Amino acid sequence: MSSPLTVTVNGAPIVVPSGATVAVAMVIAGKACRVSVGGEPRGPLCGMGICFECRVAINGQPHRPGCQILCEQGMDVRTDE
Amino acid sequence: MSRRMRQRFEVLVVGGGPAGIAAAVRAAEAGRRVGIVDDNATLGGQIWRGESEAGSEASRWTERLRSSGASLLRGRIFYQPEPCVLLAEADDLVQELSYEKLILATGARERFLPFPGWTLPNVMGAGGLQAMVKCGLPMQGKRVVVAGTGPLLLAVAAYLSQHGAEIEMICEQASWTSLAWFSVALLAQPSKIFQGFQLKKELVGIKFSPNSWPVAASGRTTVESVTISRRGKLETIPCDYLACGFHLVPNIEVPVVLGCEIQDGCARVDDLQRTSVAEVFCAGEPTGIGGVELSLIEGEIAGLAAAGRIAEASSLFGKREKLRLFAKRLDRTFRLRSELTNLPQPETIVCRCEDVRYSHLRDHISWRAAKLQTRCGMGACQGRVCGPATQFLFKWNPDSVRPPIFPARIESLAGLTGDSKQELCETTGGR
Image 1 (tube, helix red, strand yellow):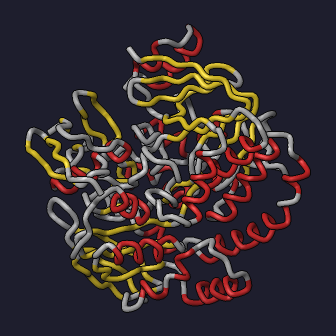
Image 2: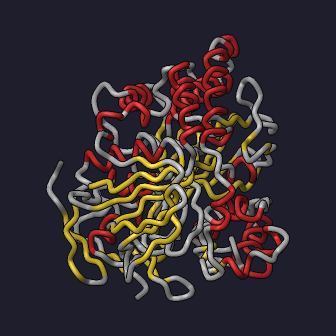
Image 3: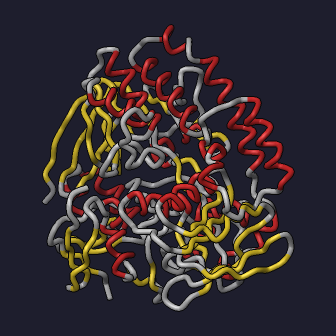
């Protein structure tokens, strides 16, 4: 296993193991990925790119499926909070 | 603007799980020009995700695929602009994949049932939490309740426990009677299909409770406890995660969009795994939930058949038949009990994308009526989560799938020609 890497979630640095997906980074950070239409915090459900509950903005691209994208050093992840 | 790339294949395989890999291997080894496309970062599908142990079945097949000459592509199929062409999107790349024969090995997803609190963060699918742990989520010292139904629960509990989780309980809705029957079936056919049942060693000391199911999850910002109904009594268990899935649902969206005939929720195939659409084959879970061994055999048959190796394909029919019988028993064992239709309360959200509550749905007569009037199933998952749930709760039949098959970026749709662009704009409203 190579060394851990750091991404930022809404600007705050989060250390994740290499090979971690963005959805994993969000759960480690203890951050909801999105706020639902009715205002509820939501996190990953299916873990396999089906439910879209873990969608976040990654490096400025909105609505990316967090569970299908691997973290990269310095990646900027944002939720719509 | 997305980059575009065009590729032609004699055989195109959609899905990189066991069925897709076996199909691609067999067709490529028979000398065909093969492409295999999957939307995940690594091949292997959900079951083999992240497994790279030397000598394992997963690594043997993956190695064989790498040396078979098949092209491995990353992307998510979202549209068919014309016959024998599919579009796949990955990051800023749109690939136009044309084929002579197509093999659909799109796998399965978990069935989720709504109950109060199921939308709280850290309530995940059973396979969902396992996938997250495979992708690096630390479990050391975390308290997990595993609930729902199906052989996956045991495999997940064993996996999480190996990774340091404390499994508080496995709640299986099926009764002892049906489970006992299933174990007998397993003895009659020793098989690796569901390794869950051979994980006894890892499961020692874990409380396994049949006739049990979750009735509510509670917590402030994430789940803190789950209340289960256990042999007729309610019991509340504190936990950090609830891993909850009610067996599997075939992913038939791509076969549906291509016009393949569907029977009892599965793509109908003939002996050679051919669907009702010429040149389109289907293998693995979309033809009926059966596990990894059946998926492999079906994939092999489809790959050989697509490459014109009919005799070789036919030699595998016998083995497939035995595995299919087993799959039928599986279905019966883990059939959902009717009490589970009472899990949602009026305020319980059923459609998570659009926050549509049970009370707003129960008076509608059909999936279509509910969609039109409540937006149920109209969000990003396109009904993949609430569709199977409402099928169980209300006996609705989620009908046609409309393109794009998955939400795609506007840029990906931008290069399409007039007619197809219009069709997509009418159905999506963009994103």
